[in-house]
Length: 100
Picture (tube, one colour):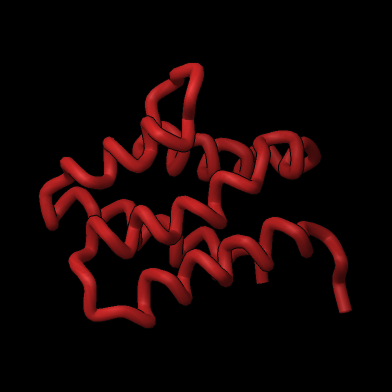
């Protein structure tokens, strides 16, 4: 089994589960997914520019640079429209698929 990106893959799999395994609002599910995603760093994709850019895009949509990225991500997700939240959830699922 390929161990490249195994840590990131595990966190993104947990995020996808959080998005899929609840009847809560998409914003609430996205907040739960953030708990896993924010454990991943850009450094994990240092050797793959394309993945690094895609991950950075997800981070930018979740939380614009701030000192406290976790609380910013929660606040951002809570105030997203359904359309915005679904767009970010789609990017998370697509990114997880790319890590497989």
